View 1 (cartoon, rainbow, N blue to C red):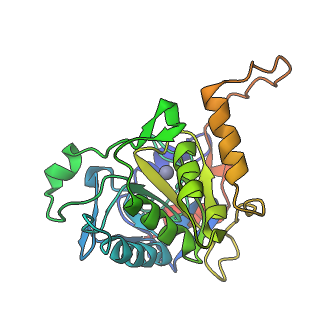
View 2 (view 1 turned 30 degrees about the horizontal axis):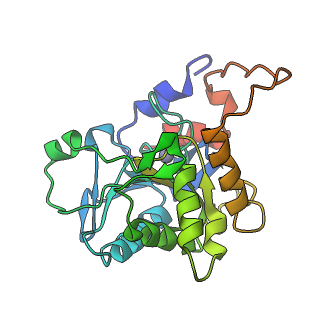
Length: 268
Ligand SMILES: [Zn+2]
């Protein structure tokens, strides 16, 4: 496997490995043993873009989606959740798209409130989510509702959640609207993109010793940081002349991944 890009190998697998469920490595450099598929349709969710075959994750991830989508279904106008990419059947780097989503613990959840959960396979290829942002992400637009706030709050309040990525204007909106407990806001992290979907990142499951957590977010609700991010969108600071040039990214080889990822690939 010397010299072969890991994404070619992982991208070619169409089912999970018959191993105990375990993530190996970190969100953007790892793989996942024993992943299970999110059922394409459940009582309160549908998996979208089935052709990508990225509805695979750790059993905790699948359980999280069951429970969060049941809560979402209690919101007015929401039948549940439309679920975007989780991971490939054995995790790992992908041929297209994400850098993270490699260990079965990242979930993209559409911002589009599901009106119905009987979409055909073809519908799920054709329908698109909707953007929630205006002014380049500094603010939410008219599609944003209190229900979005409640769904993200429920998502962040689950103890399994490590962080949630969403565009800065949404974070600031939730900071302004939350009049009760604010502790969950700490896990809501402003990020580029993420206005058609939000991205839930779960912590490593208990006992998964080969799984590498990210450092926890800084203490506090993070609202001042988000407000600064918004000011920088509206009034971009001049470029720093001393900023280091971004290093070109090298494609991940198998040798870059945890050694267990070879077994994950080769396992039946
Ligand atoms: Zn994502």
